[in-house]
Length: 167
Image (cartoon, rainbow, N blue to C red; front, top):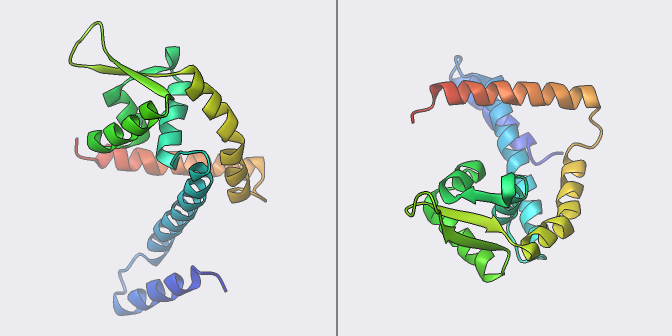
């Protein structure tokens, strides 16, 4: 019996009590949440061994994949889906570890630029295989066509939410 079975039973009971209850959509939403939560928990456990969290690893990866391995703080926060206060805390920790450096922008002194250091680049390259192992476990047994279809569907869901999202 899956841990998700009790959720399915509760969703079914809600559907019995409210006939308009969109059971399948609620089930899909809860499945997505459970998958994301379990993935984050596993990633955080592995990242902790490297002195990181899944969010700090994401921040390093955003920098690693950026032009000149540098981002404005606001852009880094957007890319990581983190609020400024949490990003500041994450960057304080990464800077303390010597994995990033911060400086005021030459073009706009109000803007802070965050760059990956050599140590940060090495940490990303060292830790990434552990991250990938969890992703491989998560998607084990899915064929390339299924993965492509899932990506298409998730992009559509994201586009739906972004079209309706308040700015």
